Length: 451
Ligand SMILES: Cc1cc2nc3c(=O)[nH]c(=O)nc-3n(C[C@H](O)[C@H](O)[C@H](O)COP(=O)(O)OP(=O)(O)OC[C@H]3O[C@@H](n4cnc5c(N)ncnc54)[C@H](O)[C@@H]3O)c2cc1C
Image (cartoon, rainbow, N blue to C red; front, side, top):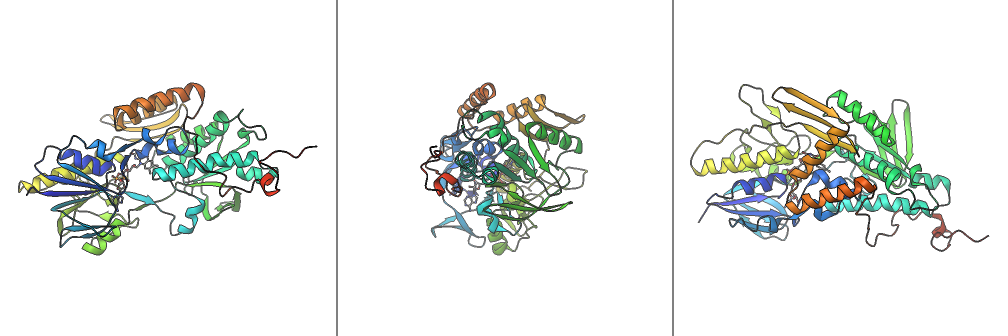
């Protein structure tokens, strides 16, 4: 029997770990609850109709078709049994492992207010992206049918909560859709009248970036027509809009399209692991790991990626936390694979060291901010060069040649035409937005009454 490696999750961490073991004399079982690996950094493009889902997702089975030591299974893991060295699937079946890598990622956190979720979807999965896209496009459709000016204004008010990279990208693109993509296609509304608000609780957007770049991002958002409210704490969200508190007092924002980009919580598999092993979780529910990414007292279990509260251990430097970004997950995947091979050879494992290649965020067409750590120091730039850098970096890291080609083609088309190619929403109707008055009045499909 060859050693049995079980990897839970085929996101950035799990994919990289399985690939790093391609030449190893082991059997790998890769389990994911979806059938695809998802390139989350471009998920906002699906949510804003810029790209279709297959451009940023690839079937896991196809990705590993040539790696003979990998068996791919579609299943959700619900429990981990360290003593028996098994995991339990949602349907009750069990899988055995000799070495386990848990790479189940993270989800959104509503900071204890899960009742806000139906009114303000977050962006993590393809389903989330489809739902946000539906809400945005249907809000314009409902506004076209609405006679009441106040209701129409609420339908044309889009609010993004959270001024991190995802919030900035979404708000910038909503503004572009309203200003450049849709004008000319509606007869009763002017989409350019839409108001896009970005609500951030902290003092500035993109807080992980240096202050100067945050300011550039704010200027570029303003140029696109996004209103940024910083120091604004959300106190309630319902079907009609949200309540915020700012330095000037409470405020009610009426909106039928609110998107949540504010908080991250670790996968619930972290809690299952804590119950089974007694390991510590941090405030976000992430699993606190040893320097070599294993669990204290359970050397055969390693936790990586967004689910791990890991530290980088560079020689001669204080350990520092690893950020929840894709390079961190990929590097941890490679480290976990290498440590399994070291254990199999009877060697000591190595501590994880994170190599930080910098930070980038796009705001919209021709605008982005880039903060690169280079051997000579920091290299920071914004605007068009940053946008070009962002574009090629993302295309480069996409999985699969076809995806790179299709994305470049779609973006080139969108650049010259302002069109967004993925605007078809199947069977959506105006669910949840049907305040549109012509229908309420019993008039046919938004036609104005004669006379
Ligand atoms: C909208 C968005 C934009 C982002 N933009 C950037 C960016 O621009 N740059 C950047 O570096 N990072 C970005 N990130 C962060 C980056 O995507 C994450 O850091 C990275 O995906 C973490 O990798 P992971 O392998 O830990 O988890 P994930 O990539 O989330 O993968 C987890 C996998 O585990 C599977 N899974 C979960 N639970 C189970 C279970 N119980 N059973 C079986 N399978 C399970 C999931 O289906 C998923 O495939 C972004 C994230 C999001 C959501």
